[in-house]
Length: 458
Image 1 (cartoon, rainbow, N blue to C red):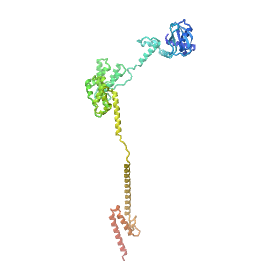
Image 2 (image 1 turned 45 degrees about the vertical axis):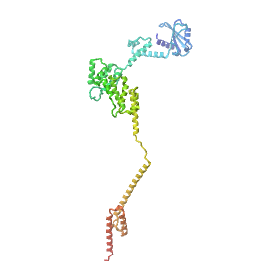
Image 3 (image 1 turned 135 degrees about the horizontal axis):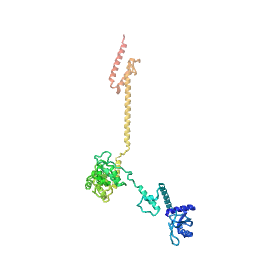
Image 4 (image 1 turned 180 degrees about the vertical axis):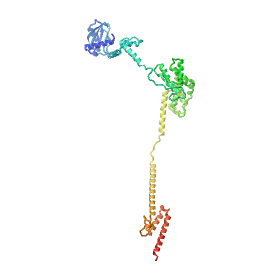
């Protein structure tokens, strides 16, 4: 009888006798063992307290007697041994308790049996699914082993699962819209082949699905020569057909001649170096362990427009322990951001408040302009009034507002003469001065003739 069955039997027995499971245990003893000996032997376990036998039952399968006991203290699986040795040093008796682990295993066992019954299957049917596994020692171990293998199979990703689809590559030059250049496509393809957890057949299917035109013809030729060609071999054939034909040594020589271009940031130059260096290592022109040193040396040699930044980063002193690509890029980017912020700060104009003297001069100039405009308006108004008064001036009585022909006032030559003199002296009427003077003279002569005619006897 397995341990899970014994635990189930103990639970049924406790329920039948009305005992608490946390204060109960069961032991299996020979048929001739007395109750007092059982109580005395189990009483040696101090964590149980006083132990009393509450029932006995003979098992034909075990050919032994199962004894149900009640303990004063709570039965703790951590302090109760799996078996107990008798006082006389004879055969050890197994101790069965209802612990948390046993309860969880029994609950899982019941759920699994219920599931198998609902599907019309048995434990033997599950075992046939895994014929190569060694036979388990107990039923609990067999359950865990079968379920673990089942979960392991179901958790494996399917070959047709979701993945980042490669873009189309045809090998046509120039690259048509919607397609990738060969270098970019090759990087993504190598990443898919090396990092994707699927079969090589599925990798090859994905690879072929992204090809067309002459590129697809190359892969077809490879598979025609070797139907079992892997995805890696297909990529190598495509690289030979469409990649750079230069050897590793030639690529390394080109790498050593690279220089920073005009207006190119140091970080951009470093990334360009890294792409070239990666191709050198892939073609065997340089070992991967020497990448950091070669990268730093070429950066110092080719960065002709960033000498000051190289000095600030103290890269020449670090040739013996060169940083890797990510560390170097991080330091350069941080230094570039610092220089950019410093240049923005120096280019910002500083708004200084105007001096008090300059402010007073500006206010004085504004007041002068206002005064000039007022004077001009006043002079224009006065000239208009003088012009109007000259046009409506009566040369008979010396009043304004009517002409001589309509004058009914008595003659006043004194006032006329006075007004004419004032009008002749003003600067605003210089242009018409001669005309008005002639008019005054003619009017005086006409008046004098009229007076002479009126005073002469008829």
